[in-house]
Length: 201
Image (cartoon, rainbow, N blue to C red; front, side, top):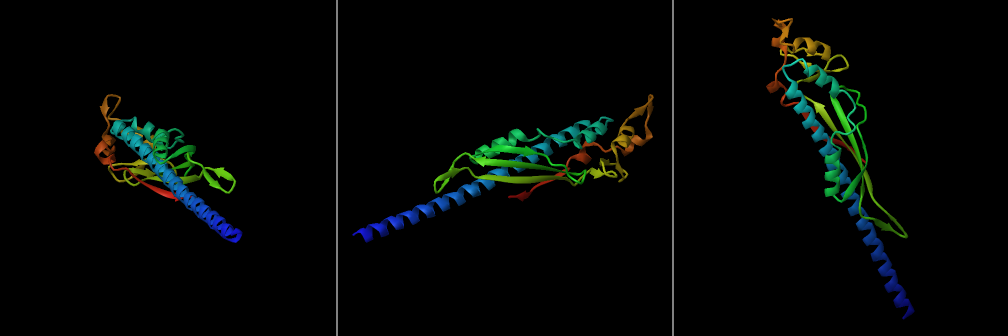
């Protein structure tokens, strides 16, 4: 009888261990999904905001300031959306940043999430964490103007912000600017970006 009880308790302990392992794997998968969703949501929101700013200033000298601003670090862009999508997947955002990219035509957001539910492994309870990155890449009118972000003119050349400020000024001293015809207008800037998750750990 003691041997039988020992076998029963042993089998029960194995079942508990397998259950904990399966639950841990499930929480790990949910954590990865939450991180992926949060990163993609943040990247797409930044994409949307940037596109709206570009099209709103297209055809004016203000496009130069817009392009310059897009080169700056964007610490807050997309954070509310990242938090929303992480929450929908049972997690919360605990890390959020936009690491510097080597190319002026790419932007990367990194999001770290932690699951709300704890997972027990033996006597220890912890929450699963995952980190994901999503990259926004300019594939349309935006271009690399000698190491800085620029905009492709109607001539096909890539202009830096200083050139854009000149080309996209309709009149200079009350006289029509002959170079204004090279300034890209809103329809040309519409399809600007490609967004995709590129890394997860």
